[in-house]
Structure formats: C-alpha cells, structure tokens
Image (cartoon, rainbow, N blue to C red; front, side, top):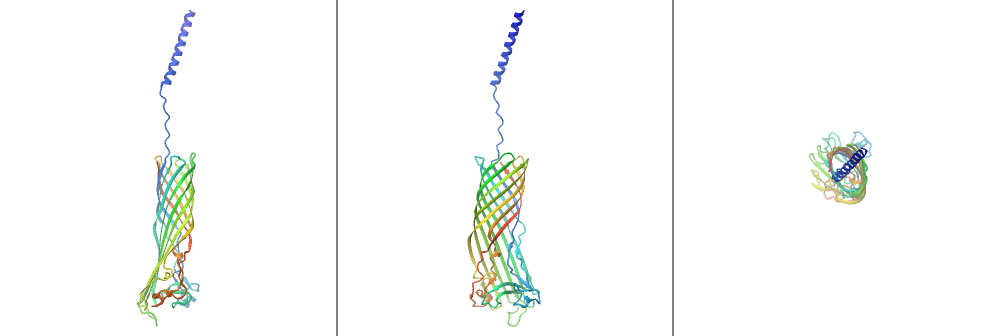
Length: 405
C-alpha cells in the first residue's frame, strides 16, 4: 500500500513539474508587445496677431503765434514775436497719432538637435496721420515767428514774425499735417538652455531691421482784405508750403532671452532682447512760395522754413541701441492651437524726426517772392539742415493665435 501511495505521489509531482515547464515554455514563445511610442514634441510653430500700439508724438517748434491786444507784443513789429510779453503760441509743441493698428507674424522650427532652432518675425503699423489747422478771417492775429538775420528783407531783426492774419488787414492761417509709418523684420537662432517639465528658457541671437518714416507739411497762407497806404492791394495773396520728411533704417545684431512657464493648459511668457547697430538716417526738405498782387515773382523755391539754403536731402549713419520687451499670457488647446494676449515695448535710442529738423533762424533774402524781385542771398545762409536726433518709442497690446505641429 505504501508503495502504491508513494508511486501516486511521485506521478503527481512529475505531472505538476511538467505543467510548470510547459507554462514557462509557452510564455517564452509568446511575442513581446512593444510599449507605445511617446508623442513627438512639436518642431514647427507659426503665429499671427493684431497690434494696437501708441508711439511717441511728433515734436514741433513754435510755427504759429498770436498776441494780446494792447500788450507789448502788439506794439513790437508786426506782433507775435517770441519772447515778448503778450505773445501767445498757437501751434502745438507736438502732434499725437493716437492708436495705430498693425500686425505681427512669426514662424520657427526646432532643428534635428532639439536644443537648437531658428525663428523669423515681422511686424508693421498702418500709416497714420495727425493734423492741426488754424485760420482767421481777420478777427484774430496769426503770425509765423522766426529769428531774422541781417540784412532783414524788410522784417525787424532778431525775434520777428511773418503776418498771416491781422484784424482789418489780412485773413489767413496755417495747417500742419504729419504722417508716420513703422515696420520691421528679424531672424534669430535659438538655443534651448532649459526645458525641464513645465518651464523653458531659450537664448536667442540674430539680426534686426527697423524702418521708421515720417513726413511733416506746413501750409501757410495770407490774403489781403483791406488795403493800407503803401501796402498791397485788396485781393493780393501769398501761400507757402514747407515739407520735411525723415527716414530711419536700423540694421543691427541682437541677443536676448525668452522664457515660458506653464500652468496646465495656461501659460505665461516673457521676452527681452537688445539690438546694437547702425541707423541710416535721411532728412529731405523742400518747399515753395506763390504770390499774386504783391509785385514780386509769382513763384520761388522755398516756403517759410524751407529755403534754398536747406532744401535737399542729407544722410548720415548713427549708432543706435534698440531694446524690446514683451509679456504674454496664453491658453493652449490639445490640438496645438494657442490663443494669447500680451504687451510689447520698443525703444530706439537715436532717430531723426521732421519737426526737429526745422531751423527757425531765417534769412529771407534768398526768396524773391518774399524779399522782392531780383533779391539774392545776402548774409548768413540760413535756415540750414539740422540733423537733430532724439529717442523714439512704440508700445501697445496684441491679441493673436499660434499653432505648433
């Protein structure tokens, strides 16, 4: 009996061992299922957005004055001379452009080595104008102030004025208009210095071009409404047009850093960069005068602030620093689309602007329509090209979308 039970136990043990071996063999023969591949990170991105910016207003020197009746200004020359009590500056010291709409577009890609990438970007602001008109039907005096040089051309020397409107004598005035256009492009190489978890920091270096163009036009007119002894007849008229335009073309190398922090599907990012380079500056000046009934030539080159001594085009190269900063908040959808809103700030350290190029010291002997037939330049050659530089800024908000794939 014991032999039989021992034999049964031995058979069971052998059977169990055989089943275990079979199970191990079958498991080893089954194909191993590969783990799922991770979803590849996006390597390309494109974005576009609308801009609503403000820019630094256009500067202007005093180009139109009036005076208080009975004041020292009313008794000095024709009146309205700068620096004389009772003179009122009518023209603004700047022209504001308000809000300027525009757009910004970006395209970029990470390379085969995901630490490195490239990016190109461009922006533009639509052309915008500003104006200031002031005319009088001879009820209030309006005059153009200037500093007169000898021999004088019939005007008082030193602080003087040119009559446009005067009670019981002339009607006239002045219209000032200005325009601005700004755009730029850049290309950068990227280095992803940090990309762990929900944070990323990239260093950038590249090239930037910015183009800023402005125009300024001053139209002045005088119409005689009452004749005075020895003066021009009723109906005599004079008009002058002065045009000043500037162009700033910045070419520079830049470096910067941008960083992003994600909070689930929300994120906030910042960018700071600075470009150093050359600003190729152009100043163009032209103008003309027309007259009838004054006994002078009906047409002459040069208006009031533009004369043959400063008419023409001048250029120069000027070193400039151009920093830019932006902050942005976004929401990222699962399909790679991201909506964002942000704020931009751009600064240019040295630009030429039209109003700063006006020389208010004038020698009218070069303009026969004003000084009289046969008049030629006598004395100092003024006005002269100024090439006066100043800083410029542009800032505003943006709203747009991007897509990464």
